[in-house]
Length: 106
Image 1 (cartoon, rainbow, N blue to C red):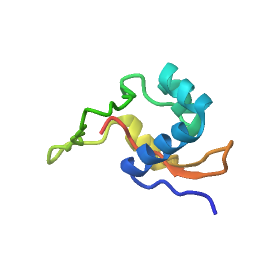
Image 2: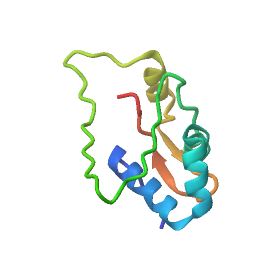
Image 3: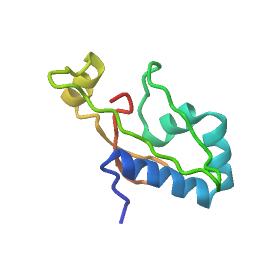
Image 4: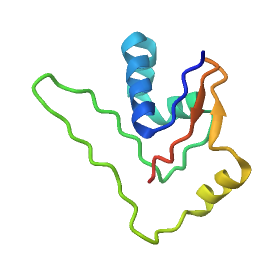
């Protein structure tokens, strides 16, 4: 059965697992994360969305605080278009995995 990615955390876990299992995937992720993620998700990632890949170190503990939208904050035009055309769910053509596209700019 295909892996279903529903949350940002699950997406990050899936990416980390793929990088752990494939040296080529990890190399591509470190070299050009935007290109790899665009290919894997099958959608264009807005240029304004930054993608940072961090290789953990054994002596460092990382804490990532998620962005919290302010009350009353509105969706942008591109977000509204994705909701309207149903493009928030895509099937990865390479692995046949269904993924839910997570708006990384949130």
